[in-house]
View (tube, rainbow, N blue to C red):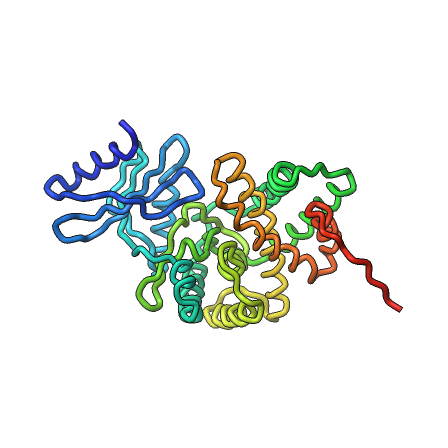
Length: 335
């Protein structure tokens, strides 16, 4: 029996007197998929997560849903579970992602991002030690190493020489020192426009949080404001950053006392994430056959190069990217 048939049978045992139809609810970069069950009698809907046990573990999703839900944010409630088959029955947070709504009506951006920033602060303010895995040096470094393996070598077909490898390793060490020194809070890890759903004012629906960790305070803010799927002008990102920083201070979160220091942490955390995402998007194409992620690489590379250009510590990394991307750098002269 295929998984869709098995899932239908499981739902039928829970709702023996109710007819329903199943339709895809969202796509996912992992082996998970989400289906929306619509019941014929009243047109109400529920979401079913299908997570093949040989590839995915539902337990982290259940655990983080409880942790985040306890902070008062809008996450799916787990109504039923079958861990042996890899099925979860969830409340439906609606059909409209932030990305779809922002593409339809960009004028809603300020209101939607205000809600998203407020929910993020509630999650971070609810941090308790010992509840989530730590976003440690090994994990942060392993993520960045996806760049040379999958993006530089596999996607661009470039073999780095010893000097270039040393340049990359030095940049990684600089980023790690900053990232690991940041205050530690709950981190969603993919807090962006595809995983936020338009809900009631002040209550965006939050999805795809099963990989949450305890990590750097700027990480989710970067995910949201330097989103791989939608770009905002830098002045607007700066304004949203300031608004977050002010609200976070009022909430008692351990952000930097000076905004300039906080913004540097934000940018350097962003650079770690961008390098990781370049590798992940290439891997999704070559390993998993999900070629559509290649379309999002140019925006991520734009973020990466802009951050490198702003900080002298990353000038060597920028020159390395120039070589990998075959960017013709014009010589400049100062008299």
